[in-house]
Length: 81
Image (tube, rainbow, N blue to C red; front, side, top):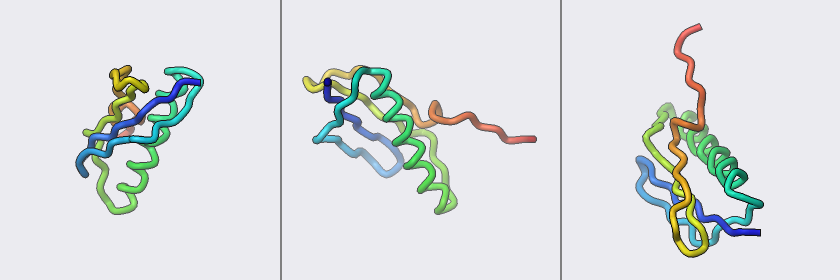
């Protein structure tokens, strides 16, 4: 099973993932990134601030960029009923 690395860029700076996570494929890695983004933003929301300008870079074991998941892509936003 391949190992993926999830490097987070957001308003708090940069968090490098040096351990990585095993996932069956790239689609599963993207789903993990989306879940992580939602967790980060949920924690921010408890403090009264939501910043959707961040992103997660998904890299392979050699450090090659596979894809980027933007925080804003992890949500469907509705502002009116």
